[in-house]
Length: 200
Image (tube, rainbow, N blue to C red; front, side, top):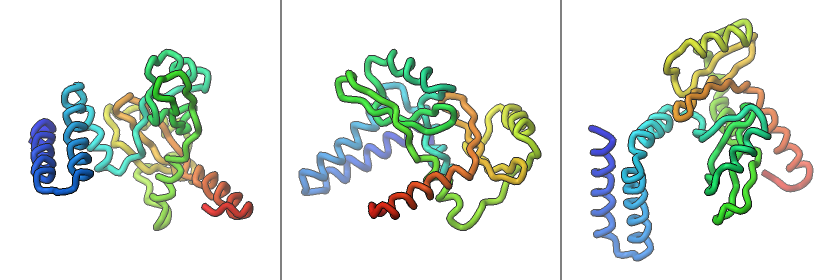
């Protein structure tokens, strides 16, 4: 079944649910879901949506819409956007940031986001996951990752005894490797909040 068929079936199911509900609030929300699917279709994003769903099925980290080496590059890119992509994620030096912008686009900023730290923490809930590949050096791992034409959305690897998550962002054709040790930043923030009496 193609993504177009799936979208049409989902819209039909939502339409039936809308007809059968009595709640005006639920009717409005179901119509919103139907229109969101039309938005994907009519804006030529159906195949992109299909790829997004594959990443969701793979339990991959959340997608980013762009990747930059420096904050200056990211700020320059943001300055070219007449309508900044509010709440979208980007990578700056392989660290997640979220774009925050006003509705009129006159104010926008890039704020560090712990999304990937939470993702890796979830992967470690039952202990370190097994590595799919092992390397002695980062250079070996980079060569292996670069040699793959279409890598999986995510792969756990080991470099010199440390676990990394190799992530392929297919929507922007970007590869990144994240050490599992970034979770320690999350734990340190939690500890500071607890010691400061702020809780989670």
